Length: 155
Image (cartoon, rainbow, N blue to C red; front, side):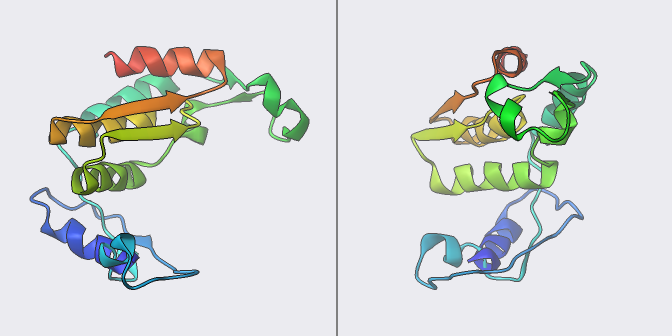
């Protein structure tokens, strides 16, 4: 499956990032859409036209400093009561894969649970923008994090 994704990523007209993500299948159906997209044992995603802006916004968010965890995480919290935005965000490499998958599948709706500070959502939105269609529905129980993500989405 992941080998096919790597092959499809190579067909996009954007420049490649140097990062590679190793792929290990736990269970694979060679006939599934995902397995047909990822055919190598690594994924080497391409940057999109939105990647630099998204990463700049992510760094601006990180400059806000540590933000409080949602109270629902208090019982399982071993890392303190706050998190830096960079500690809970998706990487740019994975974000570019999200954008690619949205471009390839062209979903009408994407649902994201655990928006955090909105970085992964911005990568989903980049794919939606490149497709000129689709909607993103996000959910984040932490009011502080959700407000930061919402402000970032509108920048």
